[in-house]
Image (tube, rainbow, N blue to C red; front, side, top):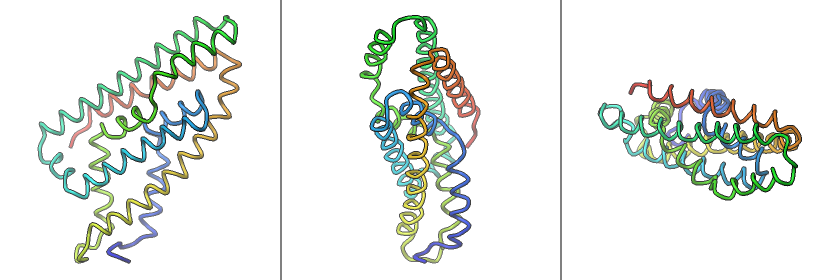
Length: 218
């Protein structure tokens, strides 16, 4: 079909890959839990835009360039790891502040949270998180190419079809995370220790993603 081969296998593999936790989905659910559905979708749109850019770069052959050029791959890799580390430190600092203020009045806590939220810009953060991941670019080209018929005259169209399925799966998955995250928000607001613990865990996971990315090879 339009240069796409073995579509059922592609869809099955895509579902498994989408369900694997990563910095994108973790950031979206954390934003939704803290700031609600609308802001969660702002972060999700940032992820989808970033993924679209990566798919386009992969189709254009940038993934092959990164794979062949160890220096360029290293630069992108360490910039991405550094950004994830910066986000992790911010989360851990926020968790520390939550823990210290756990006995303050709810109104004061809400005001402090609103002040921090206004500076966050979830779309931009999610977009940058998605972009600064060279392994994602390599994944897209390595996974997509297996399902593109090399004899088809318009391979770009095949990439568009595969990308559309990938984005549809991502929309469904992130939407489920967003609505699930808002249900956690009320519990987090009532229990500051729970909120601080969850934010600390998210920060540590982001540090883990940064270490994993920094150790990745082309």
